[in-house]
Length: 321
Image 1: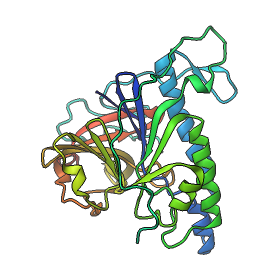
Image 2: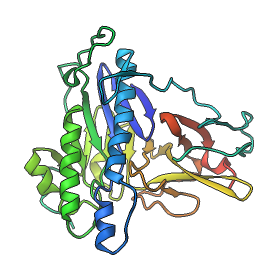
Image 3: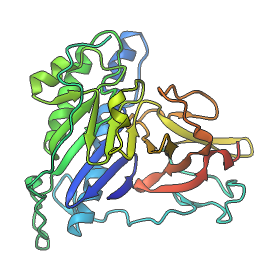
Image 4: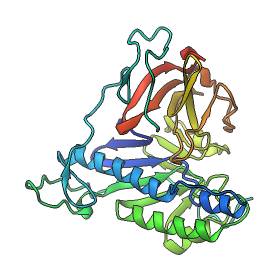
């Protein structure tokens, strides 16, 4: 099993099967803010699409040795980056004893008609077809599709209802993802009231949790006894929007991050949100409200930086605060 951290997404690979995991989206946030009288200048939906295109293209580049942009032109992809002390174009002290920044850091970066309660999938027989295309020849999407895309919940933003803006953006985004994968699985998040009529209309599966090989994918706000099985080695969660604040004197920068650790004999991967407007929440400042009492200070921090780079910062408790 290969676990890859690709920007703010998780890519799992085994025996030619690839599963891409996306954190909380909160589509329709702008519409919810406008409805409350707050104007958001950033085009968040367009930013989500741009962010996903960058991730998808990088994955295809790794598979095929070249990358095609939205205009079908060959472009350079970010080179693979070893975990280390580089953030954006700046350096951190390699000694890592105090994790202090040595220069200005970084770039910016009630239940409703549920279809099923989770299921265990079998092996997929049809492996992804991999063929290197000739120089300058277009790579067709059908041959590049990821096997599964799993969304870890909070697809929508508004709690109590579904706004027209949410409906439109969710349909558009899911149709967009269909062009990139063979199967979409949506985990129900605490924001996803009235989401399942959309999924049912589109023929997309919505679940409380999802089992794949030795992994279980769950939003993170609720526990289910089925996720405790001995065959399950990994829990992959959304919900908490993990981020880390890095300091240099009075300067503070916030970054999305993965938090990885152990709990009750399971390996836990906490995935940052895909939501582009806000980095998230530092677990040292606020409770991330998971359904379990993780000792997050002992979790490892993998900081998401520009160019899809992800860097290991060691234990959360060892980062200056």
